[in-house]
Image (tube, rainbow, N blue to C red):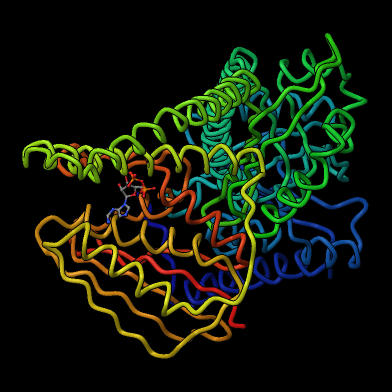
Length: 554
Ligand code: ADP
């Protein structure tokens, strides 16, 4: 066998030759990439093939090199003839290693079919589609791949432009998350909204029911009712108002009530109404309203109570007008009866009293002691009866506005001394003290003032069974003379204190009930009022009471 002998020199030459060709190849690649030459030799199937870019010029390639998309040119076999640095970055390899590789290398198996179809399509016409690239770290890079055919001197090549969609996809993902969050928030808001709507519906219904409830109630009570605003403007009347007055809604607005009130009651009612609006205290007045049915004025008790909010401000007033015509008539009839009865009783009483006096003063034949004793007891009873009848007469005179008497200068100390003397006779078990600051002169009626003091003193005795002390005092109070009567008995509650001066008022306390008709303080108050004075009481339940009156000094 003939041996091919290669000399050392030949080997050295061959080595130099190969090194030169490698340098040339590298230079060629660099030259093509930078646009210095327009050709490329690719080794395929053991042969070298030369590709030359027909349209290439340097500017164009520099431009491609600088763009943000990956740019690749492949031949029919799918080998990479050219790529820019951006593509090399996308797949994480150096530029020189990419050229000559099959583009398939960078397609994940799951996208191979899709890629093949796309490339086949690309050789026919321009097209683009999203595809995933596989980089050298085996990571997927979402990309948009556009295919355009490119005419080279050696024939057709396919230009691939790859847009990295990683940021876009991330943004899409974020957007999707945000959208989902937004959808969640939206459905939560919708739920809340629905709940709110339900609550509002429920409350509206409740409000409706409560308003209907109020209307139903207001329209089905016998009284007239209304509500008015804090400035006094009436904003609601119930049905009874319209039926009773015959006024329409239009006629009623703007203080329409003034049209149907009795002219004599208008001033007093208005004064009290305005005073109540100003003070915020309960309004109460008796007045007559004209009934449309028969044009008769009927007495009503009008009341309005303020409703306040949490801050104590008045929101509105609720008012009622109750027909008291029948009660008034009854009262009048009762007053008339009292007046007649007391007059009728007085005449026989005076005769009985006279006869008793005769029996007591009978001298001719000494009457038995027993008879005298009975007669004087009868006399005491008759005096009480007379006292009662006088009170009844006074009450009816007050009612009729006819309690009249003559006035002159009166020494209050004298009046009180007389009363104490009388009281000591009538109530021998009690102890009366008198603290007299001065001799006070007032302009009045001595008998009537005596009546007042006697009434206070006998009440002090009546309502103080345990402690028998009664203290009477006079003193100066501003320009008034004050007379006070103090006891240490059962005393009065706050409510009782306010009402004791009313006609026929008596405290309903069975345990301390004593005889009386509730007229004494009513008459006393009237007498003091006639004297331009004032009467009042200070008391604590169980500790006693001090009744006092002030009269203007002369
Ligand atoms: P009466 O005839 O019932 O005593 P008055 O008008 O004098 O009538 O008094 C009215 C009511 O006031 C009495 O029924 C009593 O309940 C109460 N009252 C009067 N004075 C006193 C007092 N000093 N202490 C306690 N309660 C009194």
